[in-house]
Image (cartoon, rainbow, N blue to C red; front, side, top):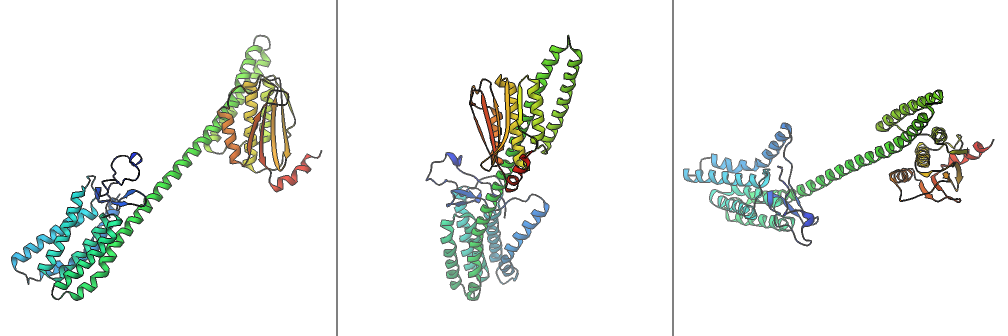
Length: 423
């Protein structure tokens, strides 16, 4: 089947509801009333192999033309009748192929479609009545054309009606009664098979669209993941580099050795940030709580903030990697915000079990929230949701700001928690 471009009268989304498009016949497409859209028949070949298969398929369908061609070749018609029959058959085949297999970008008007259908109907009847019963097979092609270019609400009546007309014409033609009975099933089957092809094409196109949508959603999700990772990685690392650079600048005149140590720390943090970015881009970045607790201690100390990490611990339960990674990102984002925005003097980090959940709490005594959440906390909430967790933020009991990240504990992790908590 050939490709025919899908067309509508303007944008379907701006078309008034309840009105069918006026050009369902455009490009010999069929109008699907159920889904209010045009259904194209087939697809143009993408390579030589597909073109060959399409030609073979056309050839199979044209096998019925062997009967009228054989009738012309037998020579029992007069020369004028043979010439007229050959021209009529050529016209019939041409119009039929235009209706069924056309795949140009030029639209067929409604008048052209009905004119073409009327032409092949008239040719089928006239040629059968004048040339003989062998030409009755043309009515099968008429049924196929009805199934291909008419909407279902019309084709479901036109195909049986054409079959009845074929039987009536066959009764009028001498010696064609046996052929009539043999062509009833092909006429009905060919026409309704074409409507089935339309349904199959519509389903295939819907599946292709769904597959494209899934691929687009996956790409968007990957972009969001990369954006979250880069924000969290670079925000933390650059904040630490900025603090140590300022500290090194103040130490340089009187304490060059200590300034050199700060510069060495800057180099180490920069190299680690480069590694983290590469891992994030590759999709292999998954921080651990143990590493982030150590990083939090370093960042808070560099900012001159007293850190209370006694209840954070490094011997946390054996959480699944996704849950541990979400808590590690939460700790990194929370400490980065404390260093950059809070103006706090103290910061406490705790890790406790609460009602079957592992809760990470980061509290500071700074100025608290001064506006809506930024991209960092929004991305953090999304990370925790992916790990079946949640994020809670708000003012602390004594002022400042408190961030709580909670993830569910697995059954095995709950059993390990008491034993690991013991001294």
